[in-house]
Amino acid sequence: MNVINNGNKGKKKKPKTIVILDINLVLRQFSRNPALPVILIHTPAEWNPLWLNHLQKNHTIGLVPTMGALHQGHLDLVKKSIEKADITVVSIFVNPTQFNNQDDFAKYPNTLQADLQILEKAGVDYVFLPSVETIYPSLPNLKLDFGDLERVLEGEFRPGHFNGVGIVVSKLFHFIRPHIAFFGQKDLQQVAIIKRLVNDLSFPIELEVVPTRREKDGLALSSRNMRLSPEERQNALILSRSLEKAKARLLGGKVWSEVQKEIMADFENLESSKLEYFALVHPETFELIQNFSPEEKSSICVAAFIGEIRLIDNLPIIP
Image 1 (tube, helix red, strand yellow):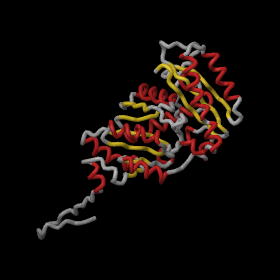
Image 2 (tube, one colour):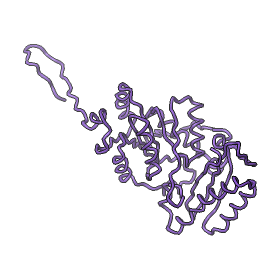
Image 3 (tube, rainbow, N blue to C red):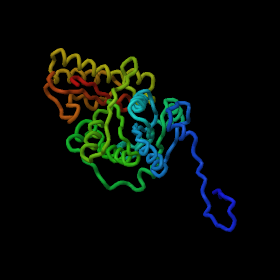
Image 4 (cartoon, helix red, strand yellow):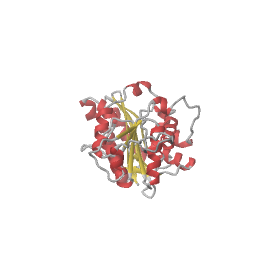
């Protein structure tokens, strides 16, 4: 603490605090400069004065929630946020409550230093890096039930998963208070869950869904891909190829039950794969569709193990 003395004798002045501003933060108010270091925040208390500063300047805030192990799909979300919002916040938090398989949680890739370099280069303004204790001072007793939406596909095969997703996303929304939040289409059922969360709890947040980013050979980008061996990486192409094959069959007039049987046989013939589901659904309600109609919205969703790695993908048929 520094004391300012104006030279008046005999008068006692209260000491004044000199506030030292972070020059990087000041510069960010005037322009987005990718060369500036990204600002790390770890708690809501650190974020609150920054949020208030941006609120007073009428800045729109975009939030990109992630679990790290970033790839180009995440950067598509970041790019969209930078385009649409004045300020972009990326959160990195591997949420333990959404893993129903603790081995999967333990093996989830951790590439934090590389992630921070990627985000700094991309021109992200802030990275929110909360600890488990910050997000969960105690384990939540609240249980979120998303109705029929969570009783099929991912909800059926990963019980409790969407409860964990809903709670952590709600906390991130409360902590960061964004105007817009960005999610990837690859997690299509999660998108439907979060839309219901926002609607039912009246979060004043706009949701932006960004298309799935794929490798040149069609494999959907996923943080779990880095755990695949070269042979498994090749075998994983069955997910995207089965989606394209099924779409072509449906649009060519084949009935869904026959298409589904054909795809199931393809998975059975690939020794390292284990299919969990291959389903035609309404992309918003996730109601299972038995009879395809080109007049109704529909998407195909797939989940399968390739070796020990569980992968998911989806493809819109009629957007």
